[in-house]
Structures are given as structure tokens and as C-alpha cells.
Amino acid sequence: MKPSNVFFVLALLTACGVTHNQVIGSYPDGSIAQQIDCRQDHPEKCQQRSQQLCHPFGREPEIMQPLAYNRVRDRWEMVVRCGPLGSPSSAASGAPAGSMVPLPPSPTAGSTTPQ
Image (cartoon, rainbow, N blue to C red; front, side, top):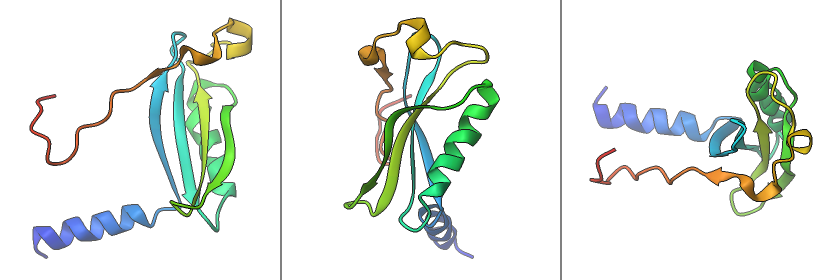
């Protein structure tokens, strides 16, 4: 199989996945915000994925943006916050809601900017 065909097949498999997640920011206490999206016919998978992502931290996901349907992308989306093992929730730590530091955008495939 030619490399271009392999790339196309891998891209297609990724696009067809039931769920995707992406870290979108971090908080001063070390916790991270993750955006999760799932296919139109599987909104329950977003909830399951949030549990999987936060399980290693030993705490339940804190929902920052509730599950909502994005008609443009034809996917369900939500944002959850997971913290380091044993860290308190934002309500207990007193971290203000706007204290999240967004991550810088990832460079595009054609970018020549060194990392």
C-alpha cells in the first residue's frame, strides 16, 4: 500500500471514531480541561469517555460545559475537568471559574514554525 493510501485510511478511521478528546487548558492546581465529542448516535459515549479520562486522577469528572449537540459538526460535545490524584474540586479549592489557562493552538501540518 502506498504511503498516501495508508495516510488516507488512518485519517478515515480517526474521523469515524465514536469519541474524541482534546486537552484545551490547564488550571493552577494542576487539573486539566478536556473537550470530548462523540457521534450523533452515541451521546452516552461522551459520559463514558469522561469517566475514563478522569479515572487515573482518582476523582469524578467536573462538568465545565454540559453535554450539548453541535449541529455544525454533527456531534455531541462537552468539557470536563480532571485533576491530579487527591486534588480538591474547584469549589473546595476556591479557584475562580475564569482561571483556566488555554493551551496554545497546535501548529498546522504545513507550519514551518519550530516547536
